[in-house]
Image 1 (spheres, protein in one colour):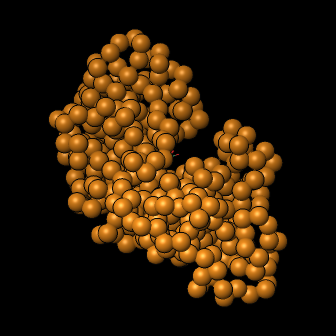
Image 2 (cartoon, rainbow, N blue to C red; image 1 turned 30 degrees about the vertical axis):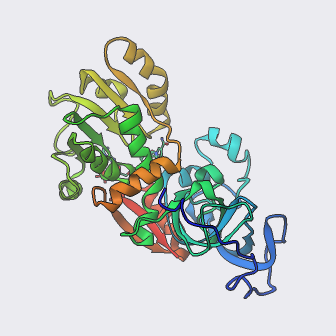
Length: 360
Ligand SMILES: NC(=O)c1ccc[n+]([C@@H]2O[C@H](COP(=O)([O-])OP(=O)(O)OC[C@H]3O[C@@H](n4cnc5c(N)ncnc54)[C@H](OP(=O)(O)O)[C@@H]3O)[C@@H](O)[C@H]2O)c1
């Protein structure tokens, strides 16, 4: 990691910029929050549609010994935020809270600047520009500040804005792990990406090209030009052509969302091809999980889903692709912080053109 050689500079938490607090605490100070210091955050206290999200002033977190406090400059929206917001599928509530959310601030993909460091932090220092997927650390990105273990963060790519950077972590690492780890992608293979024009898909097309595959992107008419512009060799407009019935077969298919049945995908695979699904309806997820192994056994094909695991090694790999220009984040819309609910509503419609980002 590029930042690993830096020397840590311990800073007192009561540093400049953290002393301008007012006394108007709306949330009581508790362990992990510093009395008197407030921040703006998008908060929800019950599951529901995006309009349950409210802009509030809450206590600013204090980093634990192994954490850094990040001033968030941009954050992107993901399907994971939607699942937590709505409490669906219901299975999510087993960890997120049965009747109401245990954590009140969602937001996983952050880009920002380190504002303070805990005493055991060794790799980061105040002022570092960082980014990461903090879904594994309890979310909390839709806020002016978030406290995160340093191991969740990577130095921001030098050639990107905070907004571009925030678009990257979850979608790009999911695409990478789906193609490289589950899909075992190889140069020269024919790879089809369904749902190619969304968050995961736009990264998947570019990462597959970086692996020197021959890429076919599937999208609707208005996104055909975008697919060509990010390097797709072939584009199938799903409103005009059904890729599962045109007789062509692919070595690797990534379905960003299922969209089709597992049998449809099986038809479109070469005899030794691999199908990986990153998301989809509950039915499609169960098909991939339960029927995938069965379909795989009946021949040389492999069919299943990917559950991405955020980590800084893979994020650093993606960062290197970004810095050499092999991957460029595609941003559909950038919303101001006060419009997070609108941003999430737009994402929920399911037709984003790349990523939806919120700028603070
Ligand atoms: N497994 C994991 O760890 C993991 C991690 C991250 C995300 N995910 C999952 O991955 C999935 C995709 O996420 P995302 O961020 O890429 O979603 P997204 O950005 O909302 O995807 C939107 C895209 O889907 C396309 N689309 C809609 N209907 C389609 C159809 N019938 N055929 C082909 N494309 C269609 C849209 O293109 P058009 O407008 O052209 O129709 C749009 O560009 C989600 O289900 C998410 O939960 C999983």
